[in-house]
Length: 577
View (cartoon, one colour):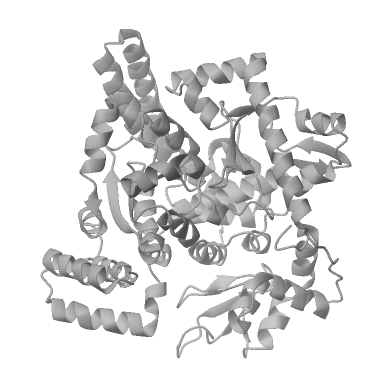
């Protein structure tokens, strides 16, 4: 259910509405091949770069990057909310939206059901043979029983009806499981959403469970699966682990933000109890504002690879806008927080955090191959996010020292930037200025434009294989909707993506160059390219594990890791020929 409107009604409205009809009431559209063109209403331009696709039911401006489906267009052009856009179109096309009210007692019931579910999954972890294997896995990841209990880790068994059966035993209507995103109905049968997964209950700062995350321990896709958004659970406003981290945040005056569940859990097990994660999505302003309630500083500790670097830079924008001081800790290539702490230990991680650098220094140190002018503009836009005039002046001084540009020139540029409101386009949108890989764009284009090839793509490529975090989220959404038998066309995806830069990237990818020629060969070439990159990253990560085995003197583990690295190197060589 989206904003109190049932999801099936939203889909019905979206499918009935004609984006060309709606846009043409606001703009003078001219046909251009299969699409329509117009001058963009969202920025000044002399040559039309605003494209509307009747086939895909989306729009995209190649000038300013604005893009979306029919709901997004009305929201932008009329300055209205999502539910207002849906209701406006529903009325126009004669679609009735059932009147539903959510009382406090219903919300309370939702919390109670989630608590029951968390306890059930906990019992499955502690009292079943399948659960025993998961506990062994956790011990191998250095997660002790205390941390496991603190986070109420659980297990969803493989049969796939544990929750449905529990609901029957408790005389609980299965509709509540559907509304809370815990079950799905297919061909008249209600089944659990989570099956054969390690379960991470997601809680509010007060400790009430609002949703769940699930991780497979084999190669099943998707690797991670989250509860869908409900009245109780909004991903962009939720931080995993905050109920366990808030006290230490207050004490230290600092939070540490990492990428995923299995980064937070080991960090807490090793005493870094001010750690939280952003649920596998881009770090948002709402999440940053929540952190600001407990502390004044944030350290971003993302994976030591290209995707981690770009994610850290994007995360600076919402953090600075929320009033947080931002530093970035940079892990060695191939490491994530979990692998680093297991191989190097807690003292080494403490040293790394102590040496975390100011966001401006990080940008210049890690974007040295980019256009220098664009890097300066990026740093300036980020600094413009800071409301506090003293802090903004200090950071502007640091920028002047780093670049050698006269501070008066930077101050003038800053004044223009803030006056024009362009500070809204920063790292979340600044990511639009960091080019997304063409191969990754093409893979997304294949998935949404050639859905018959989706099975083949996901046989080899997982969402985690995308270096660009926005693309990871899009691929994850496609895979989740596909696994539920739902439409994963571009217009359907746009209704679920709140992140503006991700929407822009999706519309841009879907309106890119058409794939022509031997489609089978083109698809296989793209898959092969993604596979080669994945292997290269795996080899890089093996280096960290090899270092750990050498340090611990584990000859057997070292032999296994070296053999695996050799095997991957041979596969990479074969794919490259």
